[in-house]
Length: 450
Image 1: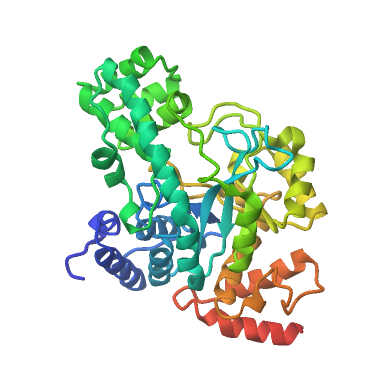
Image 2: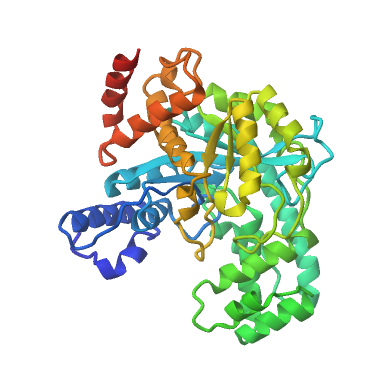
């Protein structure tokens, strides 16, 4: 490890080589033990970090390191239509000494439900919903890959058509055409089990714009004059900053928020599996399917969502329906919701015995991994939920009966919040450098309580 240095570790831990990335994690661990680097360990957690297996500037090891450096106690990878990051996320986190969890995010169909005509939590589509499958055990990775493979095939058919539609718009504007195979696919890890998303297309578009323009000022002019996008003063200032290391991600954010609909093609039924089938599959592998609450949007944290109404007008009916088809949990993002929205959602979760899971999706280099809102009174219980999720994921890989929602769980008969509290305690006692230590901790705990 002599070729590593603290000054270059950020680059090394995001290297194209998996072997080098994991070796960089070992270097961080040894440097930390020697006192050459330090970190303040916080109570904060984040279960929803995107990696290069969907769209993100972070390889899984780099995402784990960014979370470690930010002081998080738990980091979780969640990628669109992919579980590809899971092995590396867990291995890197173990070497760094941070607890980890893995899952995936998928668009699913509500077209055969009472909400088929509504815009629910998806800014781009009616009757199509984003949901997250949390806590996927290692023993189920291959089943998840098989489950998602047809989705990615159908998605890429649509991705190619979207690139064609975008080219018809931008070529007359003087922008070089985008080639799906040469410009978009190489931005992804599709050949390693990753997915290709609209963000990949928009990033390729951002690069074409930047290449065409002679300056950042010309990029702004192209966005505002040629594409007729209204750019806020804040975004304009960022885009004109010559020291802006997030420049292409900022351009992408502008395009996603104001231009995606120009070439977006609605997903087919083949690409969006019926929600009940996704829930049933998740439960069959002992994972925790969670509806991703969005809520009516005011100011978007990432700058890529417009002010818009979503599920708040029919939330009571929606949550009741989610519970009726087997959802055991709802996930939401405290920084993106008002206290009033959270209070209402939390009340509904209690009424329908649903687990609450937090996670702020990270997919841009500009975003902070920290989430201090989690430590506020109305959200701090989500930290316990995160630890319970970590424990659940590790334990079901040893014994499915130890799943939080298993019919044979040793703690059945207790209230859900009591079970979450016990599992959180088990997770917190785990040695993050030796995650398997959680098994003996669970055995002792269950013996004491049952």
